[in-house]
Length: 245
Image 1 (cartoon, rainbow, N blue to C red):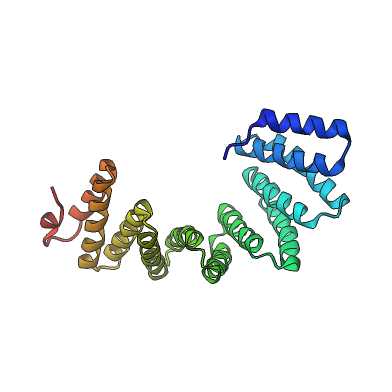
Image 2 (image 1 turned 45 degrees about the vertical axis):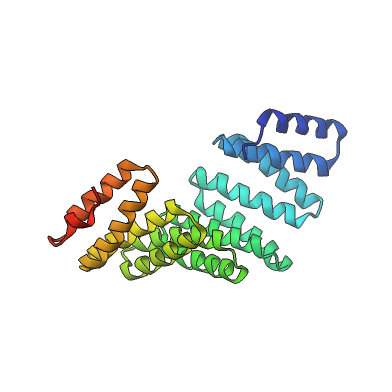
C-alpha cells in the first residue's frame, strides 16, 4: 500500500511539536518508508537513520530491527552492499534473540537479494534456501512460491540446471495449488526451456504446450506467441500438432 508522504510528514511535524521520542521515531519510520517507496533514497536514509538512533535510545530492539531492514534496502539501492549487510546483521541479532520467525525470514530474503545484487549469487543461494525451509515449516505457501521463483532464477543464473529445474517444478506445483496461473505459466516456461537445454525435447514440448495454453486462457497473446516460438524451435516431431491454433 502506497504511504501518503504528505500525511507522513504531517505526523512527523506533529510528533516533533509534542517532543515525544517514541512518537517521533514512529513518524520517522513512516516518512522513511514513504520516501523509499518513491525511490527518494537520500531522504529515506536521513529519516530512517534518525529513527534508528531514537529506537536505540528508547531501547526498542524490534523497532530498531525493522528500521535496519528498511535501511538495508536504501543502502542496497545506493549500491552500498557492505553497509546493507551490516544492517541486516544487526536485525538478525534482534530477531534471533526474540525468536521471531517472520523477521528471520525477512532478513534471510533480504540478505540473499543484497548478495545477488552485489554480484555474489553463489553466496545468496543458501540464505534463500533457509528462507524457503522456514516458510515450509510455517506452512506459508505464498512465501514458498516467491522463494522457489527466486531460487529457480538464481540457480539458472549460476548454470545449475538440475537444481533450477527442480525449483521450477516445485513452483509449478505450488502455483497450481494456489490457483496462481501467472506463476504456473512462468514455471512451465522455465521447465520447458531447461528440459530443452538438457536435451529432453518431449518433456520440453509438454511443459511449453501447457504454458502456451495457459497464456492463451489468460489473454496474454504476446507471451503465448513467444512460447509458440520456443515450441517451434524444438527438434522436429509433433510440435505443430501440440500448438492449438
